[in-house]
Image (cartoon, rainbow, N blue to C red):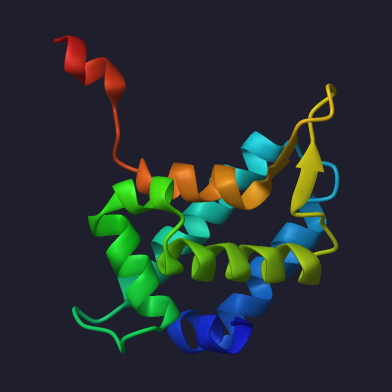
Length: 128
């Protein structure tokens, strides 16, 4: 999955993202890391052509950005993004899987994908 990510953003940029996560990740709170990783996903999305190969990471980014409801359905596209995020976390020396103080499991990937799908959401505009 990392090779495919490198093909999208470039090897140097991929290494820079991982190095950045290595520096800030281990001590950062999950909600903050999730936003950083969502920004990485958004950057990759912006570099994609209009059409990507079926079953690719690029296709997953496009599909999830256009059809965010698929996140709730645990689609193949979500699984691809989770795999990428898990790999980025592992390379950066972070644990993707975590638990709340009450023992409830969650992942950085869940938060990052939620932030990615809501990148342009401004709920306060709904009240105007």
